[in-house]
Amino acid sequence: TNTFTSYKHKSNDPNSLSSNEIYHILIDQPGNLWIAHPGGFGITIYDPKLNEFQKYTCDPQNVNSLSSNDIISFFKDKLNNIWIVDYLGGVDRAVYKNQAINVYGHNLPNSINISSNVVIGLYEDEDKNIWMGTHDGGLCVLNTHTKRIENFRHKDGDPFSLPYNAVYSIAGAFKGKVWLGIDNGNVCLFDAGIKQVVKTFRNPYSADTPRNLTKDNKDPNIIWFSTLFDGIFKLNTET
Image (cartoon, rainbow, N blue to C red; front, side):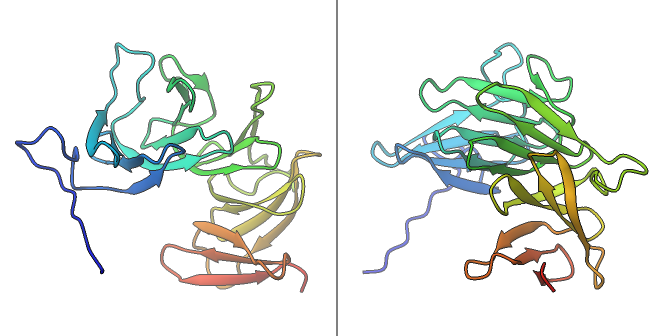
């Protein structure tokens, strides 16, 4: 039979959601449901086996807590770590084995430095590198083996740099390359080996930013992307 079960915040019940306003959900490796709350409510984690809700918020006195209580989304990497995108708080990594929190931000207390506190797009490549698109700091790439972070930005007069520093979406292309959805209607192919943009496609029909990118399953030369105001576009990179 079809059944619906409702889970809501109840002011008189500590074993409930922190808030009914939710931006994103994700299932972790053990089967717990991570729930992202904006508006200062942090994260609720629901354990369906125990039917219990645990609440997590930012504690400035605890270096092992969230960097912000305004949570936008989650991303799970190949090692089952959960990456937590915070509004204006960079991005946090919850390490799967020990639940330690690593904060990546720009001049934030106790953080690993990246170029911006507004991280929008996250992607993990075949080598387990984490790619971070930011609103105003270009592209950051974390080598999870060496822990080194590289930053790539727009450079005036350099056609092989990013056309703008707002990178909203990232998708896999071919080995060592990724597609980037960049401000003002640009889709770029970035080569990690030579560390530069090798192709740029400017949408002639809309300057709206490509918010989400995905590669076609049947034709790797076709990229689909969505926009906030102008619908969906299909880009054939070979024609």
